[in-house]
Length: 275
Length: 275
Image (cartoon, rainbow over all chains, first blue to last red; front, side, top):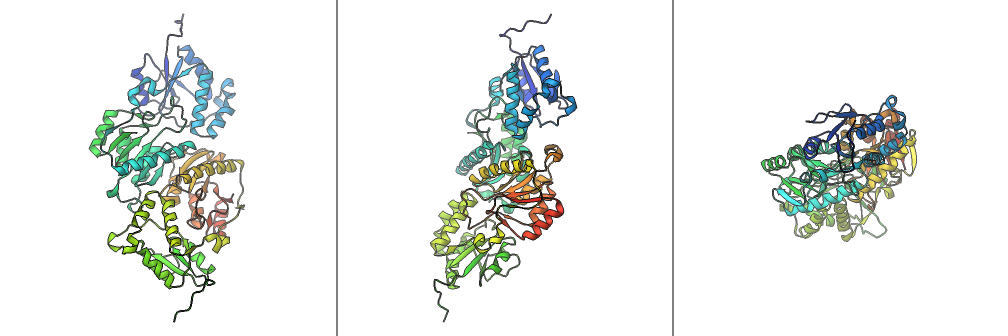
C-alpha cells in the first residue's frame, strides 16, 4: 500500500537544470524529488528521476505516483533536440502546442511548459517562495556608486526592458550612456566575453566611468520560473570585462552564494546593487 | 575677386567618414567639397579640407568661405576623443550641448550635430536625394524566400525596432524565431562574427531554416543622415555566419555596389530582400 497523499502534504519536485540553483534549493525543501532532463546531470545533486520532453505525459504520471503535487523549475535548460521516435501517444498530442511556443521564443516556451504542468494538476512554486534569501531586495550589497553609475543603470534598465519586451534577453552592458552589448540567445557569459574583447578604441574612457552589467526579469515574466541568475562567476566575468559593477532589478534576480559574490566583488573593486 | 555665391548655386560638402559611401556619392555631385575628420582619411578620395570637432565653428566659416551651402554626411565616424586644449572659444560654448548629446547615445549625437550645421545656415541633404539608386525600394534583389524566412524577417523587424527605439543598434540576427544576436556599439561586423563563432549546440537546426541578418533605420531616425549601410563585405560576413540571407527595411538602407552584392549573394546562395 502506498501512503495516502492528503492535500495537506506538499511534496515538491525540483526540475533541475544547469548551474548551482537546484542544489541551493534542495536543502530548503522537505524530501524534494530531484528530476533531471535525460542527459543533463544536475550539479551537486543525484537525480531521483530523469525524464525526456518526448515523454512528458508519462513523467507527469510518475511525479503523481511519487506523491508530488508541486513543481519548481530551477536552473537553465538548453532547448533539447527532440527525437520523434521517442514520443508516447499522449505527449505527441502536445507537439503542435510545444513547437508553436518554441518558435515564439524562450518565454513562450516556458509559459507553455508551465501551462502543461498546471493542466496536469501540479502547483508551480518559485525560488523566491522557497528561498527568499536567494532573491535580494533593494539595496547596495557592496561597493560605491557614482552619479554616472546611476545614470548608466537607468539607461540599462530602459534597454533591458525593450529587449525583454520582444523576448530577446535579460541584460545589457552600458558605460557612460553607451550600450556596449546586449544579451541574446548566446547568453550572459558570451556577452561579457565580447565586452572583455572589445578594442579600447570602441570603449568610452574608463577614467570617466567604467560602466556596468545590468540584469532584469522580462516585463510580464512569470516570476515562479526562470528568474535571471547572478553568481560568483558573473562577478568574475564582469571584472574581466573591465566594468565597475553589477546592477539588477531588486526582487527579480537570483543571487547564488551571495557571500561569495560579495567577497569576489570586494576583491575586484566592483559594486553589487539591487535597485 | 571671388565669384559671387547666389542662392541658385548649390555647392555640397561631403563630410566623409569611413567606408565606400563618400566615394560613391562624389561622382553624383557637381564640384563637391570633400571634408574629412582630422586623422581619418576617406577611402578612395582626397580631402579638400580636414576639420576637428574641437574647432567646429571655424570649420563652418571655412565651408562658407568655400561657397558651400549644403552638407551631406557620408560614412560612419567613430566618436572622436576630444582634446580640451584644441577648442576655440566659439566651439567651446557648444561643449555642454555636444557632451549631453554624446551621453544620450549615437542618435542624439547625430541630431545635435545636424542641428549645429543647420543653425550655422547649412542645408542638410541625404544619400537618398543625391543618389537614389543606392537606397533600394522594396523587392527581392536575388535568391528565394521560404515561409520561415518571412517569419524570421517579421520577428527581426520587431526586435530591431525595439532596439532602435532605445538607440542601441540597427540590426539583429534571427533564425527560426530565435534571436541569435543583436547589434550594439561594436557594430554589424562584430555581431556577425559572433554568430559565425556560435557553437552548433546553440543554433537551431540549419536544415529547418538558416536564419537571416536584418537591418533597419531606427524609428524616427533622420533619413538625411547615418542610414544603415550594407555592401559586398556584409554579404561575405553573412555567408560566414551560416545565415540564409539579408533582409532590410526598403528605402531606409544604403546598398553600396549593388551589382557586387548581388554577385556575392548568388555565389554564396543567399537572398537579398528589401522589404
